[in-house]
Length: 313
Image (tube, rainbow, N blue to C red; front, side):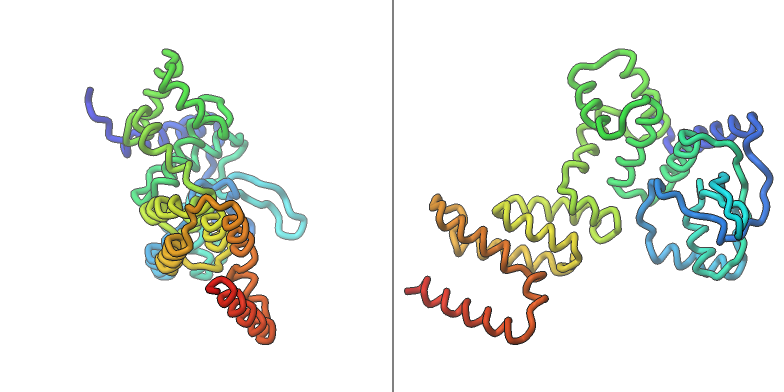
């Protein structure tokens, strides 16, 4: 079987969709639109924008302006500001224009796009990027596949797993066509090797979505967390989600937790010990400690010293 050039396939699909829209008279001419009238799409598949490349683009925009028009569709109408537009494609240019202090940007207005066409344009444009991380790739492909198969997004991973085990010829044909056009792998390989990224804890996925962890960091962190008690694991993930612990501090935090687990014998079968430890871990957290004033902190120190003497006999 000949190897498919995924990038060319994506470009062809993107151009094909645009041509179809133009044929229906929905693609308008390029004109200048005030930035104040444009809003980013909350369903934008891409959530993280690397600061260094974005800064380069900002400098370019300051010097040369926006060279390639943004793609918009009518959103609503404001009595004071006039028409409003929803961004379909070009969010990096949109952000760069804001940072560069531009008041207007060149934009192409696509009239009467339905939700599906808007989503597909945004997704295909996003999937053409070279710097997709594994989570963005999986979520982008799933969104696009859900729209093509008319499947609920939430149930699609289980649907794909079921097709791998008990394939339906019609569905498999559709999957093979889709993945030959949009992905760098077969649909079976996608299910086995890429889809499992969604099994990472939600806190790690959220950290990846906002750029605080990359995929390899999240995978390694998850591996280490599995060796800890559920209560300790939950506390570390909660602190990461709340920003109490930074990714750069996770190594020492995990080392301390693993050392404590070894020293205290968390694998002990004594239910009383586990109960006490669980109660302490829920109360004695960085978040709670930071709320204490100096007097209360000294009291905590005193109580811990008493507990130490009691335990050591």
